[in-house]
Length: 178
Length: 243
Image (cartoon, rainbow over the protein chains, first blue to last red):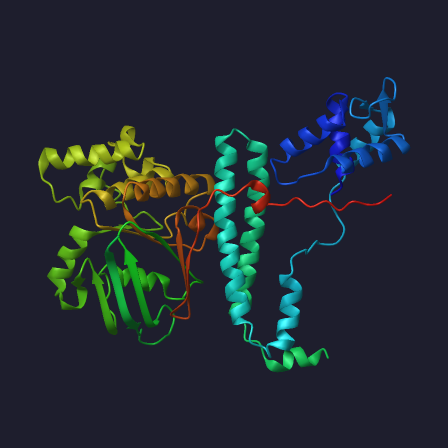
């Protein structure tokens, strides 16, 4: 997702200046997304250029300049919120490419790669569990939900490792595509 | 920590099929550990648990619990071993329908009379179900039935608590609560061996995860529990469009 709509969403509540946007954004994400103040200013400038936000008061020290949502900004935010996420599935981790390469390089022997990756996923599940507990303890139900999503995704990754582990990879499989 | 369970080159062959068989499994479990055993159905994980419980005997190899070689025990000796050392929690609770919760908990009790009743009531209280002591299983929710089953498993203060898919018949929320109870028992010192296919629940409470496949242990992972910052665990990514 883009920072743009996160910023718009925060400004819907009340006018804020750059640092407030940064702090509230990071607090909302509970440390799972850190932004630098430069990105915030750039985003605010673009939003102003596109007519989605406007500054309140006189332009001077940009740290003190507050922004509010324009009517177009309200509309754009509502549209974004109502829209389901579609488009291609995002696969960001290296394992997907490692898997493809390993079939060729390791001559079909993937067990070690899968075993190590499985361990890493187990550890991640444990870390996520602790993070979820902490979020609940801190009364951050919204953040706990986010962590829950991550837990279920990692569980799926783990199931994928298990499925691959029980497969028999033939040496001809890699060759077929070459 | 000291050794509690030792499996040495354990093989289990079932006639007429290979499902659930074990093929040369060696394993050491220390006192106080919470170990999860994971694997697909038919991988042998339940067989492993049944051998440790003394409910079944290996085809070859040895199983020792608390220094006791189960292979040297006769049927009566095994029954005594199970009664004194093992608490077992099953997926489908297995409560007797014509007995109340309290009476179910008391079935395997070694203490006698009022002493046993006091212990049973204490356990029901500890598990948060003291108010359903006189109810019959048919009038209990799944979560309550499993708590009664846990109390029954704990009545003789077993050295080892075995749980085979204890959340398998429960909804997510109730399953979480039951696992939370097992986690608390472990923090109080109870050694637990858990068979599950739910990796989320396993890694929440067990610091050790053993993977079984085709009758063999294919991985034995000891997980770390450091306090990690949120950003080290999850990153919500930014895909900034430069427009």
